Length: 144
Image (cartoon, rainbow, N blue to C red; front, side, top):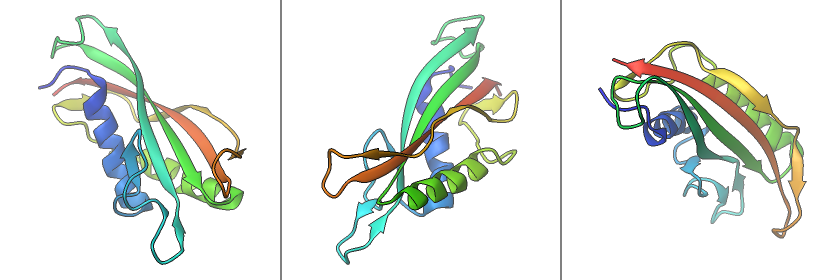
């Protein structure tokens, strides 16, 4: 049994996305090694996972008996708008599949839910520009 902290939930999301998007295509707030420009000139879409917040139902973050409602942001990055949308669709389908997300030492109270989403947008800072789409998921856990 583990306390309802952000890291185990983020790692669980990364594990699901690495299966759905491809090995090493989801990173903990950084570009993973399998994503982005590759040595052969191709670009692999990828996901950045950001744990945002935990709201507790009783207890503290160090209390392994507390229930937690946790929010995780996933930013899907690609070299074009259609590719960003495709990466998001693939990641979203995987994360919203019942039973796909398993958090070490915790059990899901409810299925993972989509809490918020943005449209595909262009980031003009890098050259060439990148495209991204953002989903926020709510993951409610309880001790096992």
